[in-house]
Image 1 (tube, one colour):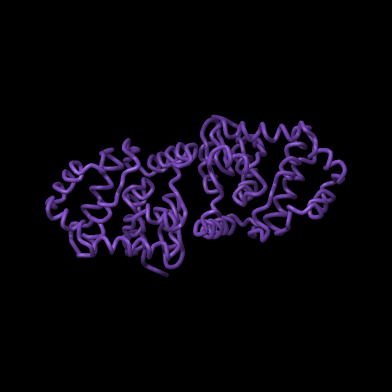
Image 2 (cartoon, one colour):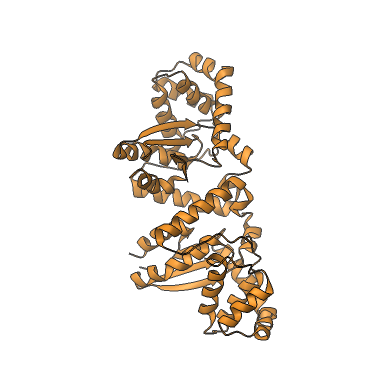
Length: 196
Length: 196
């Protein structure tokens, strides 16, 4: 029995947000370790030839209604972001940078950005909005600018994204339990079952 | 409470086959009427801009493994067809033609073709294979040629496909319970819940 859940995600994916809200409880119930793998979904799409469901209008409309069904069922606060799609490059560099440095604010940053985008509907592509979230989690604007401008952080996000693609990832969220792959917030019951 | 399940499908879709195996029991348990809506998935893709998951290789590999998980869970016999993708135009014309004429062999034809493709792995794009299935359900080759060559049957399949797109369909299987839409074999538990 593998006791690790590998969770690949991007802030810009509403299904990643829903998985983010449920996975800690699933890991806790199974006594499993939840490992967070930030990646750039745009890079995954480019590498695999996949694309966002919103590029097919009928599919985009359905997927939104479907995400809302899952949010209601699970009691997760959720609202489609009116500024979607949001360029998450800087936000994801922040996540990877904090994580690779072992910074204790990584978890707070991830929670706060997911909430700002998928609960509060904020335009997180705008620097002023990002600054407000940074302040709330105790990261100074200059510190953040240095972090996301660091070539090692930029390279690490690319490396992580390539590693995800190398493992078979083509979308987000993707979860692995050992070698078994699960794509989508709608496979979390399968993830829980795989841990039993 | 709406007591009708509208089921949109194409023989060429393995997920449609899996839905076909489960929906009769779901309808029976709910006391609901299952209405079969044959459509041409290729036409739906063309109209909506959607495409098959196999066009993204990493997604195609995942989707196949995922379908096999559902088949195992549900005890449905299933094997990926080595001749996939199969051009289903003539097969779907046969289904629509039998249905529009109120022919009692409609159900047997649908069962037999789904089984030939997704259980027996047969090359159902080849006329000789089609002839074998026709014989098994008591349809003569000349009768079938006249049916699928009938302009009214051809038009009806086009009309049905356009009607599906007009209702919001972008893939297969798609199920409606009243106005609520569900896409994929992985939403059948939601379909059952919507009927309760």
